[in-house]
Length: 445
Image (cartoon, rainbow, N blue to C red; front, side, top):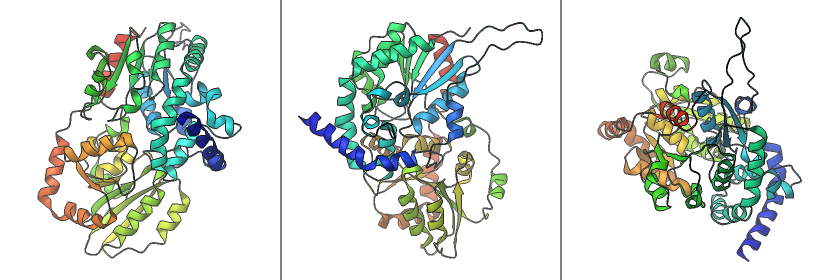
């Protein structure tokens, strides 16, 4: 009965929002992107890599094929697959699919109800963009797992048919919830299967995980997030199937930064404390509220980087705000230079998603996590990790904001402590370790 009422409610909700979904196709983005970047999509879409010939027309050996699986419900899965493509494409023919659009397509209730105008990805993104976090938490605790479990045999059958058609030599998932049917399909096809987790709380990744029987299977974790390995072991995953290879991070975050040149490029006064505000695709109202509060603060000498992506309406609203004399503002449209902005920033105000937190940790950038509104249940562990490791603080109310910012600007001892804590984090290993792991499971030609 709970499933019936849940699905009925889900259907009604879908009817209410599908016109917005179809028009906007919103996507959360670590690059503050409010619409899915068509160029980014092209970079991860399936490419048909033909066999190259040398100058003497001698054909080279064909690379083995790896299929990456993600979805556009949030940008983290997309970014992870982009990173893996960068790491593996020198040795393998790497292709990426959106699971919701490619495999789950005909089973997607949202798509059925909206006559193809929207899908589950759109529903997820719209819920978050609208701030319906409590509803999202309820649906992804109750409705989504039930719907997927009831269709697991159909999902497995469709996945197997896809693998038989595309003939990849290995399957890698950067996606939660659907991994049991994917694993079974890969097992029947006789190819290795790997799951690359992206969260500190692996609840969404553990759905029926104990039933995986694939003989050539691993699941990767990031030990920056405490407790992930124990979560897996408690669900029956053997230690030899768990690999700590870190979090997939875009290559531009690994490059050496010329800080004076970046400050000059963005016209940052030398005497300013630089605060970066990055709320992603769900955060237009939050971004505005933070900027409004900060620009009204007196006796603060700061420069704000405000990431707005492609949200032109937010840009217009922000342009109407008047700042106190000590505060200057740079409104940043969609850019691929997020790592540069982080490099010269001294404080990051951001949402509780794992991607932006991991990037800030890598850049040794103290952070304030927004918790002025409810957050997704699987992101609560991110907040706990940041506070326990003392990488930053949490903003639970806007009444705290001025005191926290003053503390980071004026309390040099406190700021130095946070910076020193960030310097102690484990070095980045994903780019090297993912290659080692994949070549062990699926030796390159």
